Image 1 (tube, rainbow, N blue to C red):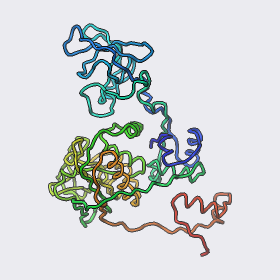
Image 2: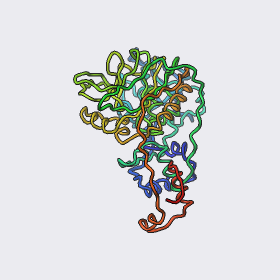
Image 3: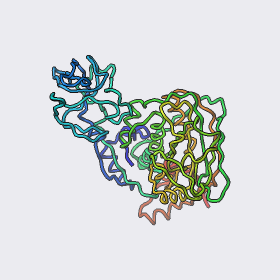
Length: 441
């Protein structure tokens, strides 16, 4: 599990520095495996201005650019981008830097007989988006020429080893709650979300009642008239800090919530769904093409999310390409569900699939986070992409397996070797989310 200090502070009010946080994480059983610089490999990429563009003397489709990094420092760069022009502010990669997409290390090179000192970058080359038709165009950044483009390159990220019995700490909020309970700060309240939701979702959802059913609850919200786009910078940087590649605002939102709240989500292009969503057992031999671009042949009794035309994806593991969202998607169905760990584990092992969602569902997800995830996902998508949301639909039900535990303070003191006051016991239990009642037997 990877987190950054700035992201942690979205959930935790604390004055503790990174060293104190690391020490506390270790003392409460969350082992820190390593610390690294976020985007350290991108620290060489600079904001630069194209001062002059000339035609390459030996190539019709290439240009010779004079590039400024400020303070009269001019660099010659050969560029093939059609949008390279005088006055353009863009991103420059110097010799010695490594291009994220291709992993190619740049060096001074002769291109058609002319030396080029580095390159000007497209968004695709920096893994910011899929856009590759031209170099990046920055606006209102004249004052930043010569500065690092990736502002968060100095922030350290913490890699924490999470044991199988602590799935609650596979989300940054869960880690923040543990730190707050240990006395390192105060857990911030989740902001209330109030959105006018007038209409009912046009997509019916049902969970088939059958033996070995792998889904207990399926929550969804329909969002119409969205304008899917690239994520804002703050969201891109959060996704990159996790070692992931930003894809689109809708996909990045689902990934953000998975790491923020330990709540895996999935977004469907609603216009690609044939009539309705049916959560059912698979039949041996049926297949679907997954988002990892592999075709999977299913066996009996695997949890399938399907429509009238067939499988759309494997519940809690991976979605399919047939209903995947794109930048052109106009209407989406956002999913937040509960899948049984044993079914997830069995299916993923048989098909040899390992995803971040599978990793969480097989360890156990809090069913209470279904609506929380839908609320946050809906809010983020409406804020970034616009649109209008339906009322939330939740089908299915789980048996309440929460236990009542008698806590004997005297026995506790004998076992651990020290006593703790009743008020402190109550404070700790409440901070962990327990419902606390005191009194005699």
